[in-house]
Image (cartoon, rainbow over all chains, first blue to last red; front, side):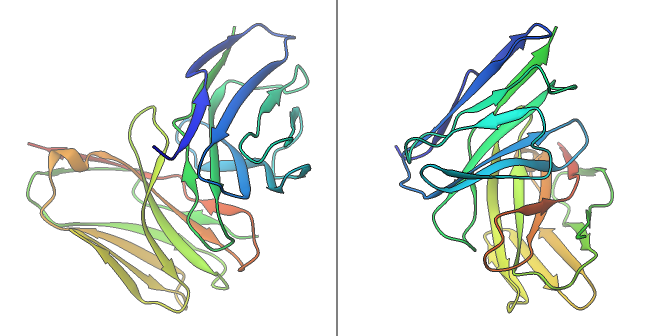
Length: 112
Length: 113
């Protein structure tokens, strides 16, 4: 089955801790994306990567970091510098610019 | 700066009704517009993608229209079913090379049996 997997589904973090959210795809897509969704709001772009070993900041990159060492994987680290990290995080990928983006099931992060 | 708005934020209708969801955008220079469905606590599923040169796209009971000049798109759902209950989001891509999608806040749709 081709698709995007995100883990864990739920994540709890204490203030001051860094956490890493996993995103893996087996669609052979070049581009991958991380979005944040807050209640009643649309998705906002955190980071994106068009090729391995390259990534770009989105609209709300402060307090987040990413890596793209493999085509299939695009992990997101939420650092302690992120002031309000409690949110639903969605990973997406697509083959070509102009194609639709395919989304993973999401990770809900809660800061205790 | 592109802004996308979806009104209403929530809509409740009886089963079997035809309904229309609205999406408006401020900058008419778009490459495409997409409609997504999101079930509670889940990721997004693409429903329809309309290129800027197209006026509409259809998939089953769904029909999406695009009027670039007025900055509007509608998603028409025919013969609604309880399984259609979900949040519907529209998103625009500004240029062919743009990596960013600009999303509306979504319309939460409830179909009552």
